[in-house]
Length: 347
Image (tube, rainbow, N blue to C red; front, side, top):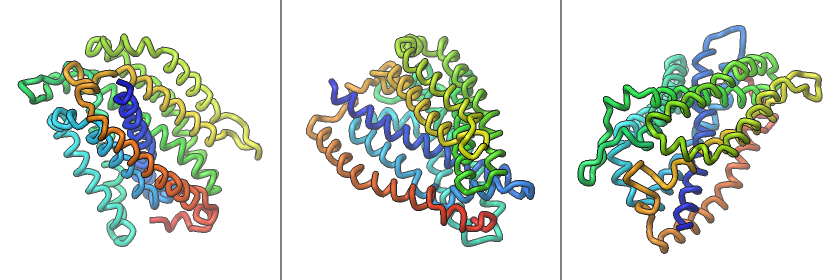
């Protein structure tokens, strides 16, 4: 059934876009907290300069992902709802807290420090909770009783797979946000801040790669079926490793002005690398949504609804894509916003 695979690719695309935007957004919140109050660098101000407009937009892709998942695979809603009720509830609570504090941080200067720490801490906790879902759905941690699915928390919390996935998620978040903020700092003509984030990216790149290998290796005792499928996708993983090498090495390439590093090349390369690796990982999980009981065929909607959703998303994206591009040009590429706005006053 090709329609089911088309639908799951659309869902993967929304999840991939949210993962990228969320990694940079949450990572920027952490770096803002990490460098808050430092007088020797404007790294916190550059992170806030990015967070000022971007955090309002990132969650759009999360909404698109959830609506697409429920729309295309309605029969998976009950199973996934019972499995993910705890982590998703905490994620929603943290997102609400983070969003509320981000709104008030621009109008109530008295609590700026508190707001900064809330943004940084939730920026770490939200990805941890989201990444905890991946090991759950690969099998071995869910017990099915009748129509209900129950997480075996004692087995899950004792599994190295959980912590390897969390470690990979956190290192990828900090690595991607460092790369992006290094490029953003150079756009803002803040070369000292560029050097700070470039140094962070150089350190975090190998850590992310090591955690990706660790997460794969820990799957062997827990989900050997998925490891076998990943072996069949070796060409995509190998290509992603080549792209990672190109992007990471770009941090040392000379630029036109004689400066060390080309962060724009590094950022774009890592987007491609993570896209290839995440697609190969997701394809290795097929055809299961939750192993071994729930497949994309079992959960798929009817054909009429499928085509209605397809047309709806096509029209919606035709409207949203130009708006996102305009947003990018307005806030992330506009020289007046980046250079004329005083960085130290950004809140």
